[in-house]
Image (cartoon, rainbow, N blue to C red):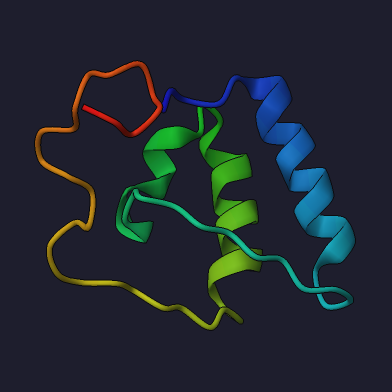
Length: 81
């Protein structure tokens, strides 16, 4: 959950650009779309990626409480307490 460095921004743009208009892209994120610019160090690349992703997207925004336990047991990961 840290900003993408310029190299990662370019790599993501290349993948999105190669698939744009040809293939589907599925993205799952906990960060609202309105805050996606903050992930990119290069705002020009952010504009290009988001333009390609958001304009033709089918967005499903989930609302409601988290289904994660509020106080998960610290038991080593086996699910037993």
